[in-house]
Length: 366
Image 1 (tube, rainbow, N blue to C red):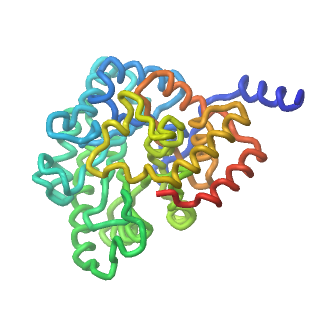
Image 2 (cartoon, rainbow, N blue to C red):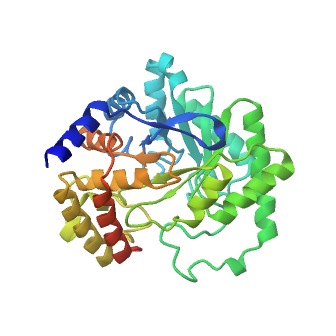
């Protein structure tokens, strides 16, 4: 016990934010990335300012946003999260050079964004210009495709035969991807973005873009962000292996499974203002009986090691081989402080072994 207490004290004294290289970009980014999708609905400009300032003080230099934020997405608040960041940047211009800011272009499905149109080369140009205006910056460090044009196995569509790849016109998809890449080349050449990446895509998507980039002489994607957590580890090992071998940074989003892994929804609880009271069109597909059973076990394990369930889930995600930076978010400063602190510590082997036992019992809860 004395040895264990001594080890914990040493970790607390020497803990500092760590950094990783963002794929082939050469950019150094903090192991925790500040997500922003609550700014504009669940959080105000004042809240966003407080979160950004605190995150920077803790060593975070990586902020992720998207043109469709905040969530749940709607016409009235479309673009407001980027406006929150832009407002902060307008008052903190000297700090811009120290930050890596990433945004995303929305795909089809939202009538008020380019009339639900697919991502195209022309859409890239329009979207980047609009984001630059809202962000009040001259360039975006990394610009991402929020989801593929094709029907893909994400957002609850990963079970057998929900997506039927045999029905996809592959050559048509490749032609659309070539058009997107030409748009990306245009905004890179003009200095409007520095690098680009993917989101909610697959190993095929990564490899096809890599091959097409080589074919067209266009910069390769440097990253991909996909949903990944103790309740949803479907990218391990196949997609993460692809990322590691091809030098594409892997950025997990929703490492707390939209809040499930905090334990706050156990027993059907719906705390006021929580995300489950504001769910968007995808519904509550993550909230299953298996999810709850797994969360209960993870909460017990966190209590055993005297940490919060959130810290357990985030520390686990951070130690997965191939993970570059984990996207976190919070509506309250107490949540943000706890979440960031998780990246300053590591889980002991005994705890990781016990996590593995639970994970193998509940490998795919939604």
